[in-house]
Length: 104
Image (cartoon, rainbow, N blue to C red; front, side):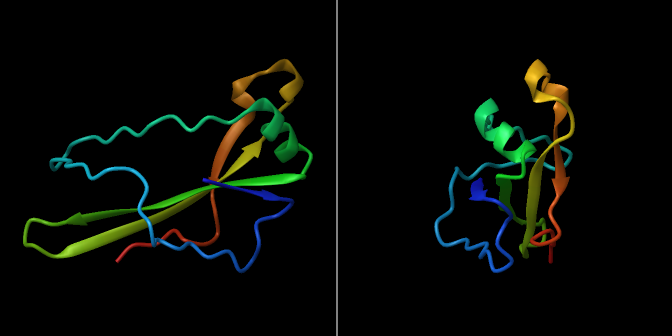
């Protein structure tokens, strides 16, 4: 996850030099659950006022049954769609970012 003052830079590099997290095995038809990413109401207020952008991004890699390696990149932007003064978590949404959503 990255936070940016204002908008996300057009030249942001989705560098994958140092993986964060751990290797997991997921069986076909299985489910993967990740950890919670804490978002403070202060940072969400910055997002609501267009003073900050929050980008959640990463890459899934896996080896298929025939031994070939594959990947899926993902990137989501955090949006505030309602009134945060009520502390309503339904006001928080995620949308696909226009870059870094692809797979081989």
